[in-house]
Length: 154
Image 1 (cartoon, rainbow, N blue to C red):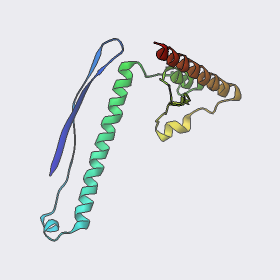
Image 2: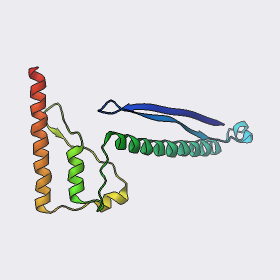
Image 3: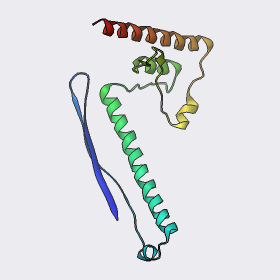
């Protein structure tokens, strides 16, 4: 038994350009033993179902990561650092990411999803560098509050 579906989409950029993401098949296959079905061998059936779910999950994660990469490249949200991951490239990334406020006007810091190997490479900031991050957070917070006040006055 096989299940397959396709996923496609179009992403619009800030400048009106469009990125067309082609249909990509996503699916899983599963083989059911007729004897296992007849004898209601749930253990074997469960193992087959689990294997198919694992295959489908792996395919969906690969599609997700590939799609996010294409979209971030298209929208200009990819930062390429010649010297690898540095504190400066991290700050540049934080500058570009859109931040937000919660319902109590508290700053919602962006979440970063990275591979565990990449997380190990994140630079540990000095006291001065950590102050740079705090200053960035304060500035983003002030900018968002000002934008929210202008929206409320309109």
